[in-house]
Image: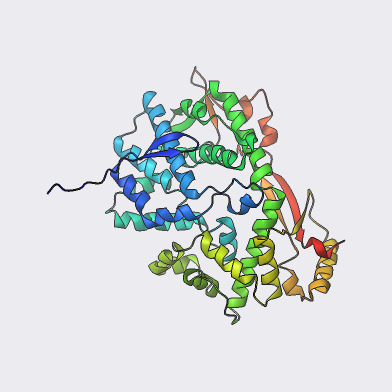
Length: 414
C-alpha cells in the first residue's frame, strides 16, 4: 500500500500580497504547532475594531506576512552579492515568523495588568527556547539571530530595527484592514533597495523618498489608529477591568473566568515564576482574546459596580469620555471629576480610580539615537536619513511628542 505523504510546501493567499509560500517542512511544522496557531485568536490591533470595524486581523496574519517580506529581503541581498547561506535564510525566516509568538490576549493591556513586569519579548524568548527543545535544536541559529548574537548583524536588523520587515508588514496590513490610507507604504520598493555595508543593513540612497514616506506613514498611523482617542479609552478601560477583576479574585470573590485565565487572576506571577515552572508557559499559551472577552461578557452582570460598569462599557461600546492635551491635567480638575463619579455611583476613592484615570502617550516616528536608517550612496558614503532628507524635515519627526489624557464616565460630568 502506498504511504500518504503530506505536502508541506504550502501556498497561502494573503489579502495584501496575493500568493505566498511556506518554504520548507520545518517552517510548516512550526506554523502547525499549537503555540503558533494560538496567534489566530489574538487580534493584531486589540480593541481598535471598536473604531475601525475592519481592523479584526490577527497576529497570525501579520507574522506570515512579515515572513513573506523577509523572503523578498533575503533574495534582494543575495542578488547584490551578500552571502546568506541556506541555513541562515531558514533561520532568519523562523526568527521573523516567531517574533510575536509571546503576545498575550490584547497584547499590551495584558502586559500591564495580568502579568506584571513580563513583556511579550520575554515570553517570545521562552517559547522559542521550548520549541527549540521540541525540534531538537533546529531553532538555535534563529534564536541567535533574534537575540542579535550572530556575527552578521544585518540579519537581526531585518527583524528588529527602525526599518525592518516587521514594521513594513504591520504598517501596510494595519492600513489595509483599518482603511486608513495614510499608512500605505511601498514595501516592495524599500525592500528592493535594501543593501549591506560594513556588515550592517542600509538602504540605497535612491530610495530616500520611499523611506521618508515610510517614516511619515508611521507617525500618521500612530496618531490616527494606534493612539486614536477612542482606542486609548477602550484599551485603558480594559486594563482597569483586568486590574479590578484581579483585585476581586485575590480578595475572595469567585469571578467567572476560563480555567487558564483564572490562574493568572489568582496569582501575581513574575518572570522568575515562569523560569522555574515550565507549566506556566503552557498555561499562558492557552490564553487568547476569547478568554478575556467571554469573561468580560459575564462580568457585566456581576454585583461589583466598577467591574460591571466597565465591562458593559467595553462590550456595548459605551466608552469612557477621553480628553487629550499637551500638558498634564491639574490634579484638582481630576479630583473634581472623581468626586462627581463617586457621588453618582456611590463609590469610594479606591473604586473610582478605575473609572477616572489619567496617563500619557508618546509618539516618536524616528529615533536617530537608536539604530539609524542609513542611506548608502554610490561612492560608498553612508548618511543618516535625518541628515539626508531634503523634502521633509525628518529631524522634526525625530522629536518625541507626548500627549496627556484623562478618561471618565461622561454621564457623570455635564
